[in-house]
Amino acid sequence: MKFRVERDALADAVAWTAKSLPNRPPVPVLAGVLLRVLEGHLTVSGFDYEVSSQVRVLVNAESDGVTLVSGRLLAEITKSLPNKPVDVAAVGSHLELTCGSARFTLPTMPVEDYPTLPEMPPTAGQIDAAAFAAAVAQVAIAAGRDDTLPMMTGVRLEFEGETLTMLTTDRFRLALRELTWNPGEPGASFQALVPARTLADTAKTLGPLGGNVTIALAADGVGEGMIGFAGEGRRATSRLLDGDYPKLRSLFPDSYNAQARVKASSLVEVVKRVALVAERSTPVRLSFSEDGLVVEAGGTEDARASEALDCEYTGEPMTIAFNHQFLLDGLSVLDAPMAVLSFTNAMKPAVLSAGTEDSNGDADAKAAYRYLLMPIRLNS
Image (cartoon, rainbow, N blue to C red; front, side, top):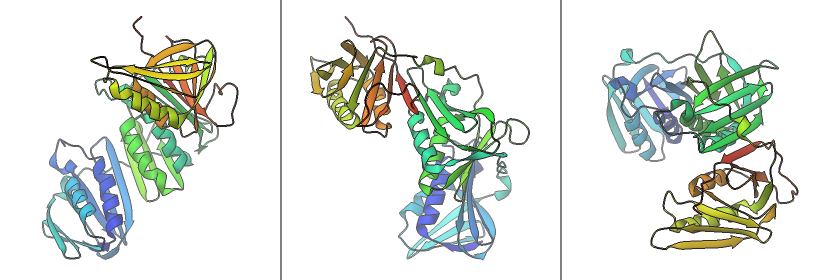
């Protein structure tokens, strides 16, 4: 195997593939990335029996072949190379990389011990890559991180006709995002629970490439228990999570008794400043009235902070408290100039959604993105 490739193309391909490799692989070969050159293309692959990733890159090939080398080491080397074409050659039991005056020789691993990557499941449909990436980013923040509750670490995908709904929760907050997609079969209805970290990494990579992302999913038969994503020369597969995901939609109130509209960027800045005196578990308090909004927090040794900002508010005066990081997480992915906070009362979950600067009246109860946040009880 011998080929020449642009540095950036190689570094990007290896970095994305190596990102999904296990930190402590059960067998040494799973720490490797498989490099295969065939018909003028380099395919970089990684697999850990749960997640697979594969990238195709156009190269100037002198000879075809396949080799297996440490993924993380190769990723570190390729990103540090000078911005010049890279010559790669498999020589005996080593891989040689030459870029300008830099030269590296890496030991290879036995290719025959490497597992066969899974085939992509049948194609279910397509979705705009940028919209897909934005939606995944909005819901992934609310996914659980406790591996003892694996079901909560996933993103629930619900496909109903041309509507794709994404749902996540860590029991303290809930994120819901609806968007349109192009199903392969009109009226199709199915669900999948995908590991949030895998979905987020995949969407973040495929989104900037443009075009469409192909979603591959089978309810039964070939590819059962697996989902695949492909776009612009890249593909990834992931095992689905098991378990009955909780019925989350019913947690959103049907109506609200109060609502606030505030500039999202201003609220982010104020919460960050006020939270400087708050310990990790100390909430920030938001007091709403016709006069506007006051954000407050208190820390140890009588440290206190408060700041007022303009706010459009309808309803009875209310003080409600939130985990400040959870609140900032929701505000950071709104992708809108105005934040709309809807309340039932100070002891029940609030719903954060997006608003425009010229909108008025109540926010749409069926907004495309809704972020439900549990309040923290205040000591009286």
